[in-house]
Length: 448
Image (cartoon, rainbow, N blue to C red; front, side, top):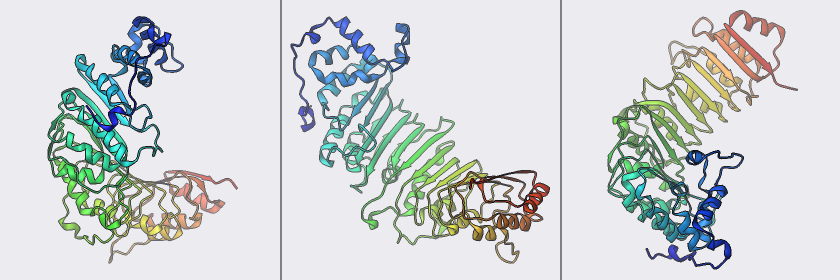
């Protein structure tokens, strides 16, 4: 395939003595060069388990080495393509792919040399990724895993046309993840079949695009793992609407049970759509993780989720501008700075275990709100909460305010178990009260 990427690192024939070694000798050298560090392979039978594809990096040395490496399937059954490598060569990739005819299952990773890499410009990365994905259709029937991790979302958009109409019956893992939202265009796909998929990692806009495609979603896996990843356009008005994300999640109705993780997604702050009664209901979640979300997305999601299966909800570094009724029996809050945000999340929560870590917003004002009860208004916040665990990093509350909250709730919604680390100083009288009124009580004062 002739593309700009194909000739970036041309292979050559070398006359160096080491390249002229017998094939068997070179294969032995490549095998030991690829052995996982600190593990001695005792037999040929252990090769599949303990040989890593490090030898792929030796392929660009010369055409002879490439040809010899291609003889051993250990080096390309789990094929990792470094998209920003200075030795990137589409010829090498095509050669390795041509050798998979005997393999029933293939795993391909297209990734950066490091998480912080910014080496390729958008156009170069896009050309390279499109050149790679264009090679894949003959192998779709045997792909077990396809992971694409790029710097620029535009690269994923441009390469997506080669996935349009794809039928991947064995695919269990698919990742279409980018670090920078340089392109807000839709994926160039209208249909996609992946009936065996159990893990999907994809940016928020691309997931919304997929929800409009004709797709065969899995019904067989016990759990489907959906990871919605970063989507943050530079221009706020190009951000997604919160309703778009919620509506897209509705396509999972046919999936048995779902673990959902949403990380670092920007929504339009002027969306203004808070008519939650018209939102679809998301009812099949087993676990929910929300990280670095702002604006209306948290409240929109929380008002849409009504899953009787939901056990644990993890919320980290989020902000909520309106009431956000959390679901789940166990609620874990990490890095929440605003006490108003915490209250908006927990005041309608009907779970039993609250676990808090590194939350400056867990303060005396919040404890006062948790203690307040007025039957003529909204009643008691989180009425079924019976356990509070603080893992540290919450330094804005006092022991006296915490005790008052527990005492006010004692006859209405009793706190039974307390486990607090990095806690404020507790005097003898308060400690005695807790020990008398709690089923389980641990209070570890912070070091002074």
